Image 1 (tube, rainbow, N blue to C red):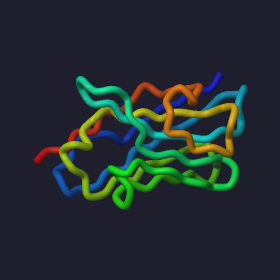
Image 2 (image 1 turned 180 degrees about the vertical axis):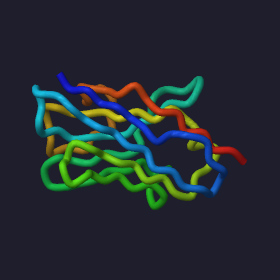
Image 3 (image 1 turned 90 degrees about the horizontal axis):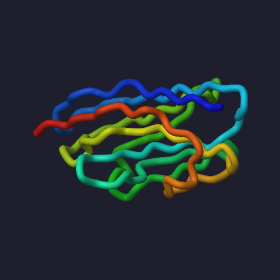
Amino acid sequence: QVQLVESGGGLVQAGGSLRVSCAASGRTVSNYAMGWFRQAPGKEREFVAAISRIGGGTNYADSVKGRFTISRGNAKNTVYLQMNSLKPEDTAVYYCAADATRPWTTSRIPVDYDYWGQGTQVTVSS
């Protein structure tokens, strides 16, 4: 089993920055692609960013490209999402996800991910 724990959410003003973190642990899976998704009240979960385990490829939603950056820690068991120039529409619960079977991919589809964290709230005020 793989466990994912997010942290770093909070309240920020529009135009500000925030970095959320995802710590992964578990014996079953050692290599996997990682993704960030978000879900606002009344909306379905949407893709934000992803990074592959093999090749270092990244993938970003058009709405965040140029503002958000996904990265891995040196130990490869931690993934970060640096969020700059935040907008009120970025307000959502942010979820970390792991694709345990296809480490070379950066999927935008939630069903492709095998494990999910509990989420961390990000609120952007005007």
